[in-house]
Image 1 (tube, rainbow, N blue to C red):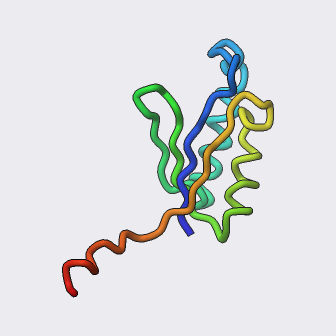
Image 2 (cartoon, rainbow, N blue to C red; image 1 turned 180 degrees about the vertical axis):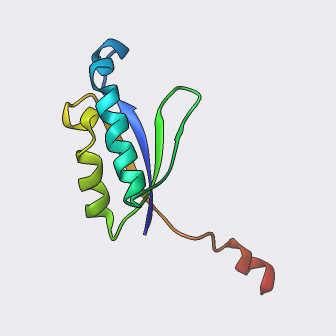
Length: 94
């Protein structure tokens, strides 16, 4: 199953709070990419991370996100949604 995870910085957290954990965060992201759980990663124009995860279920996706150093240290959180294939094409073939 595919999931989209959109980062939200916790209210009151500054860039200075994040900086000490960014290298460790990058290492964990690379590990997730290598093991196939992380399919894509982007930043929005506001520098919020957007992750596309491939997991067995939502619980596994949540567990993976909880292992990110910025999440572990209560600096960011993610809004997680399961992705489903677009089914709108069926409307063209009624």
